[in-house]
Image: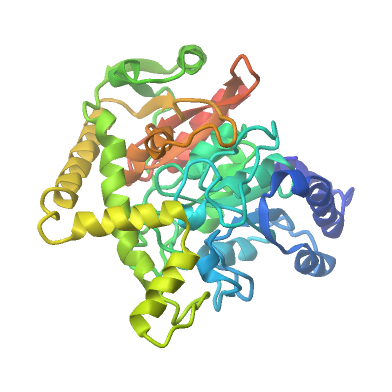
Amino acid sequence: MNIPEARNLLKSKSISPLELVEECEKNWKNQEYDLNAVITPMFERAKEIAKKAVFDESKPLSCIPYAVKDNICIKGEKLTCGSKILGAYKSLFESTATQRLTNAGAIAVCKTNMDEFAMGSSGEYSAFGPTRNPLDKKLVPGGSSSGSSAAVAAGYSIFSLGSDTGGSVRQPAAFCGLSAIRPTYGTVSRYGLVAFTSSIDQIGPMAKNSFDSLTILKAMRGLDEKDSTSVEWSPVELPEKPVIGIPKELFELDIDPEIMALLQECKKKLEGIGAKFIDVSIPNLKHSVATYQLITPSECSANLSRFDGVRYGLQVEDPELGKQYKKTRSDGFGAEVKRRILIGTYALSEGFYDAYYLQACKMRAKIASELYSALSKSDAILTPTTPTTAFEVDSIQDPLKMHACDLLTIPQGLAGIPAVTFPFGKDSKGRPIGMQFSGPAFSDDSLAVLASKVEEV
């Protein structure tokens, strides 16, 4: 069920908070062996909270169960980031996002599986094994917020939290037939989110529809003195009948023809509710993956240097300190994380900084400028969320092909602008297809409302 349906049942006392949590737990017990979506179940804790809970209509998420990606801190609970290197580490504090959801009445029921340290696009790069798509267990659920999307699609929770750097809430939502929002950078506090790429990371909601996603986002966002990148919310309203741009470069990219056909169908639906369309141009869209794959490894090589076997999690003993660091990281980090750390350290090293990292920063600024220019001519931009639908587990071995999965979700992160994905039909194999609106900074609410209108028609 979605959030309004759950609230109506709770309000009428057709179901109690405890029964709602127990229904989620039942779904987890019945499906988890096949899905592997959860790292830390919290249902016993959630049931104790639900026993004492009373539905409060004034709280937008009162008694609503939700799942949390395991790179977001919940005080006293395990925090693994899908990695061996954190071992049995437990968080010493609560993230701002989860604290605000608690204040809004929500109840966390599990910490979900994920690509290690949020580095992946399929949910296959977790130290705890791959997550599978509840809609078809042969398929990946997307990544890196793989467990969070699977948990909602399988009914473990009514909504979930993920983190979005290159599309890690939007791509798995699209693969699992869900809605998700990547917020304007800085509007949701990153306090309590384990850093991957600090200049891009944002916590975002995943839910059954865009109305629910927006409800969750409103409960989380707001200035936070604990996060120096946090900003005041300053809404930008889109017109009732928006002008929507479609980048002409889309037709030059390798995107599944069935997805492009549904893009045209989505355009017709929007024209039916009064939207107008224009062509816009993002000339360097094709370079967004290469840009991202230099900037994010560079930042993660700095952020992950704190995992040295001294302060957190795994520690492989050796009398020589340098060897202790080496052994801990060698045993603790997975192959994809090691690959990105090596790339980032190389790109930042003396003699290569100007040739790689600096050039990537310049291209990032250029892509952002092109997006801003396109949005100066249009109110929002419409694209597919992903170039393909969900693919089979173990079907992509080439890292470069895996990185290409994020082609259409990377640019918004580079520019710090919001984007909303919403389900729009299926391909001939029955696999969900997502469409995506991007807009100017602080247009999150308007984009979600626009997506809701498409979902209605």
